[in-house]
Amino acid sequence: MQRRPCVLALALALLASCGTKAGPKHVILVTIDTLRADHLTAWGYARPTTAARAAAARGSVPGYTIDDIAAQGVRCENAFAPRGMTLPSMATLFTGRPPIETCVLDNRNVLGADASTLAERFKAAGFRTAAFSANRLLAPGSGIEQGFDTFVQDPAGDRDGNAVEAAESWLAAQDPKDGARIFLWLHLVGPHLSYDPAPIDGVDFARLYDDPAYAGAADGSREFLDAAYGQGRALDPKEVAHVVALYDGEVARIDHLVSRFLAFCAGAGAQPSRDLLADALLVFAADHGEELYERSRYFGHAKSLYASVLHVPLVFRCPASLPAGRVVPDLVGLEDVLPTLLELTGIEPARGIHGRSLVPLVRATATLPELPAFSLWRDKMFSVRSGRWRLVWNPDHAVSDDVPPGPYPVPEIALFDTTIDPHELRDVSAEHPDVVRGLQAAVTAWRAGLRACTATPSGPTPAQLKAMRDLGYVDGEPK
Image (cartoon, rainbow, N blue to C red; front, top):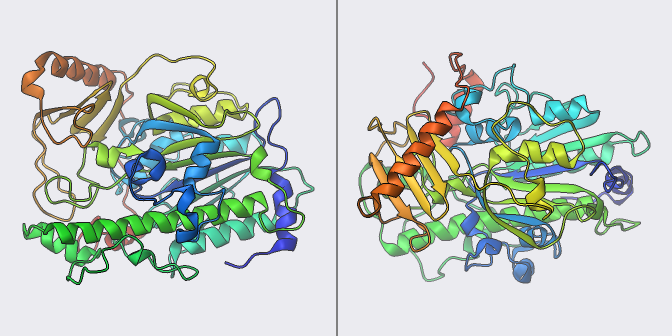
């Protein structure tokens, strides 16, 4: 990625006036596909995938790593996605509504034109809006493009690198004299299957965490992993460790790219050098995580109702108005991002949505009532985290038909004590029937309080079908 110091200095001036009484003038939203919170060093992972102390090993820019951003802002320790799938989760983030209300229960659906999105709210408030997506599912035609003046999705070559370059070029082309407010969304896809992190700037991410003595046939390709899963072939511990190391290499590569983009936004290396991120509101999140062989010999995400896939990173950073180093332990969800951003930017709150503003929590000015975090698989299976407990409830004994085909049994009822079983592997429902009944009642009340989508879910478009085939969500040709 070439630096453009002259045009960069002009572009950075656009981010200069964030700390007004009404809140930040500009907003940068960075989201990552398939990024498990517990594989980030700031969330306690043993490997330095995002650690500031190991930035040089990843080629990341010191001061702008994911861990740096988390330390400089407010880290939501327990944020959860509504679904282990990209489009449903991102539709929830952009609307403040759960998938049952958006009618986006699956990547096959399209977010309806009647949805009121975050980008539309920013545009109506006078923001210039631009999106740069490395995921072909998050593209014009999916409905997520609503409200964006510019939407760039380039599937060729290094998709993540292309998205970062395009975002930087767009920023550099803006006229700093027109005073326009900016909402920029950057979505990167590296940790999604297949796991095959390409080198950047001399860093071999595929070997960054791998055992150099490993010489087996396992790799991070869908061909290898889907075949093993579909055939019921168990991988040995060294094979699993090798594949997880490749996933972690993808995470480290994302940290490299994110840090370079944020350093660009801060003017690092430009003349004159100015730390304009000190005045900008930055939001960092993920759409979902990845199972990584923790149950049913499954590496993917679409079938899962567990924390491995639902627990996502969420950070709000704006030094002009938010405290640094704050950790919010409360359970929050991606549906809370829209109302939080609207309040932080001084825009009229959205009405009738499910999400709530987290501003009292992130500003440490007040507490909020403790609420469970709800997730689902389509509208058939449900997962709820409340306090120390997670309940998985499959009342209709549904069976996932997501690809790749293979066994992923979801019991009618399973309860996990996350304080002693953070990976949610031991069902204790028989020992705590009162907790089960209480959480079932919470799910029932939550569903009753939603305005269920009555329209027939639309989609998929031909472009969505092609993207889903390329990403491994469907088999065969469109019918």
